[in-house]
Length: 450
Image 1: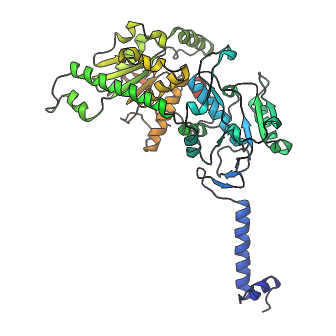
Image 2 (image 1 turned 30 degrees about the horizontal axis):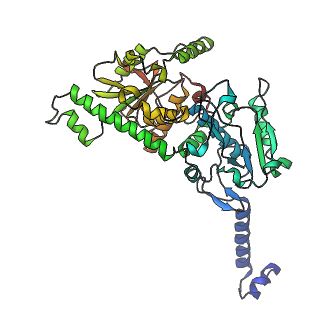
């Protein structure tokens, strides 16, 4: 049989191949070349850098985007404003927008103060003064990328992209705008600068799982973590002392107080939303939405926390409350026997918080609530929702996907919704949701499974 012409080069190299073998070799080499060019297979979180590109695969952003995050192309967004958790959502939304555009997000400014209307009074604070910059890029490597303004070669040549607003600016129009600016001449700009609305108000195109991944990459700087550790230590210390004074009865020859010398005293964290501005807001929300399970009185919260099924007492209850309530002594009165309430003032850590601006104070309280043995919050609060999301992620990592009718570690509850035995409703985040809408604006349609 004659040797095909395309195999003669193999003979020159000393490879004496028959026609069939030669064809197999050529087909195999061709297949490998096609796979290398068209089907890069890299782990979604183990990015491989090549030519200023961090390659990723299996994107959950299923809008036909390219498989790469450019490290030499950037997205700039407006200053991120409002409360801590609104800012975390806005930051994550900006990250996911940059991911869709295959760009690195330039490290945005956060807002240390809290002004909802007087935007000019907002005190900016760099992202890396709150969260660890390098840690974020390490944990989110290959998923999203955060850059510094010093990485930009020419900031004067940025293209300004104005986000639309109003009722006519629909999610579809918003997505069409993103697609348009992800191709053609726009892709050549080193920086696309989005101007206009705060990212929290942008239309939401991304699933909860994508947001959850970014939230996991947000690690507080050591200074804030150390302050949270001090508050936790104080809760455990004062809690153990109170438990000892309330319970001297022996259990198997060892009192509960002695048990806590071996194991830390457990505590329940309650995000107690009863301040005046919240009650006005939630009452209006109930009227607009024709829903009654949004607002909860102080008495209702106390009763439902006291009715948590299986809660072992005596137990410390840490109250995460607004500063305006710290001087209301009634907050600490009326709790069911066996529940030992504390807030910042009674713990003696109010001064620790006052050293910092509003944003940092919220971050400390968030960490204290996140690490609680039991968390109870309001399902229409963004703060409560993000804590439950983080705690749900922790449960999922241990293989738990449901807390219905079973005892789980790190359980969470919503006190504004009536649950078992007149207690609060068990609560886990629905991780299959296609958007963050229920978390951003609240919902009473919650479940005890993901």
